[in-house]
Length: 322
Length: 224
Ligand code: HEM
Ligand code: SF4
Image (cartoon, rainbow over the protein chains, first blue to last red):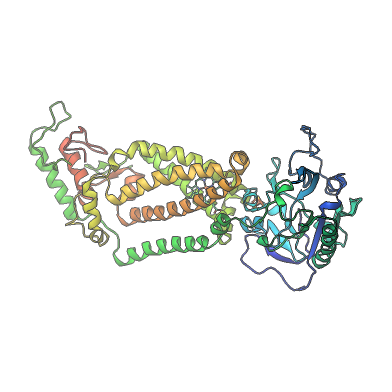
């Protein structure tokens, strides 16, 4: 949302210079969402609205527990509910807190054309700096998780900030603070990974043989991680991608074609200039005017031109039919 | 406008206005588009006031461009039909580039190079329009899937680069062949210019007693 210079940047969108790196060590942080401990109370969703002052207008209730229906410029986190039946016929209620995953390699930042509209702090948080955002929506196309949303009011892009404002002053994100079961934790990425390891062991001992940590390598890991009971099937958690990565189309579009294209444009302009220097302009000469005059005179001496009423003349020096 | 006696109309007033609307749109689109294309060129968005303005104006200008270019296609397509002479002309392109057109086949209203520019743009601009609508966040972001929009962005940028390259060729040709610029600003050319660069076109005008831009009576013989 806003620029917190108390944090170092490690990435800045659409910028070719090196971000300032004088303060060279900050711990990589992460939020751990333990799906197995979530009771779906939405305290985190409410806390997010409260801390960030987001009040989406009241919309339609679609008869499910998911409410509102989707992420929105004013809905930065959303509980998604899925009913899952395993092969033994047991019903499981899988509740996932959806929102920005704060990828280590963020597709939104890669796609963004506006310098400084998306930054990544050294602690790993990916943040949108609204005053630099031009509202093009490239971030939506770059994101492997379908998270950012553009406001129809100010045409700026919004998403979870991981409470970068709170983290900058050593507070945990609002959702973490509000969670009554301890299902959301915040700390260094290392601590969170270690703790997740213990949770996974525990889940396995209780029969969830595929329990695991969701920290997808396709985006070099994320700064929001899940403990999943069924880490082998992320999609059962309301379409959490199996192997998220920046789309190859986006990679290609943002890759070599940019410098090659600009070089091509420059080369075309230079080639034109060189032709001008070597061959020079092509100018009609007095001889051309004379030759043209000749043809016109020859014509004037012959019978009156067609179009003036007569039939078209076929004896004129016109070229053979094609 | 002072127009020398005997001058031939190369482009009439409607065509010229239509052409310059198209040109203005194209330049504005190139400036705003390239500012989003690469960070090195982001400063160009300041020519529109800000990045938001460049982003916001671009698609609207694109729509004007499409309508305007359609007007040019309606006026020019007949004179741009491809024929066998064009191949012969292409084979002598080295002579053309060396400003020595004597043994180059005579050409009608447009030569093969001009026809290439015309048809390339006639292909690229509709593709730019369609992909442009697909990636137009403000109004159409829910109309297509995200993978489609990703492909749309890629195709839009590739086609834009192709169009810009062709546009550079077009502009340079207008600077290089003296008198062409005036043909599109004031609309006329001298008979000598027509004789030198578009002799078949010139013959067809003389044969039918026309002052341009097209022969008076279109017969099989004068069509070229
Ligand atoms: C014909 C109608 C056109 C439409 C509707 C259109 C629309 C768009 C839209 C919606 C964008 C995304 C940014 C934004 O929202 O402004 C865009 C980007 C762009 N457009 Fe167009 N455009 C059109 C024609 C053109 C033309 C003729 C050119 C240049 C020759 C051009 C060059 C570009 C470039 C270079 C980008 C940036 C692509 C990138 O970031 O890689 N566009 N256009
Ligand atoms: S809409 Fe997204 S991609 Fe476009 S400038 Fe804003 S943050 Fe960057």
